[in-house]
Image 1: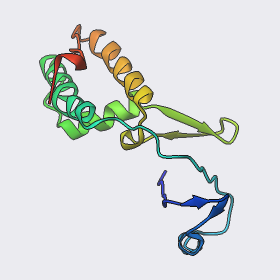
Image 2: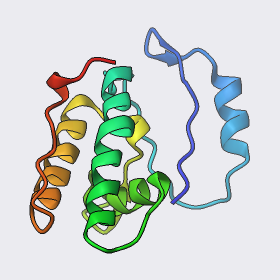
Image 3: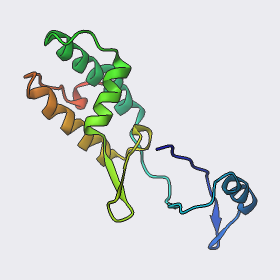
Image 4: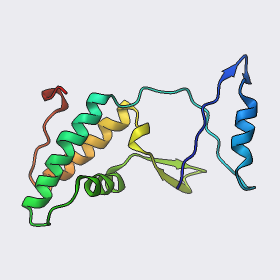
Length: 137
């Protein structure tokens, strides 16, 4: 699913950049859409992102290689982990499923994602993922 977005400024219960929003919406086909309005939330920090890219993916790459499954690229591992363990969001009464992009993960989403990866690394690879607190980037 392709996700689109546009920043919307709301002042006094009105959209202050209405023309920009109308222009954005005019490019859509007729049909039902789910519009979500939310305040920007705390997303994962740069340090968490560096830990994921520098440590988690590297540990996964080594575990996969050492188990005889060949050498996977870091990007391929990232895509596989998102597919298997990415945080899912159910919409329209649970009928549709969207895997959220890591760029939009909140801190709780990130912690849940790491826990799922930790479990997968331990069984079947018997690898313990280091704690993020052990690293400073």
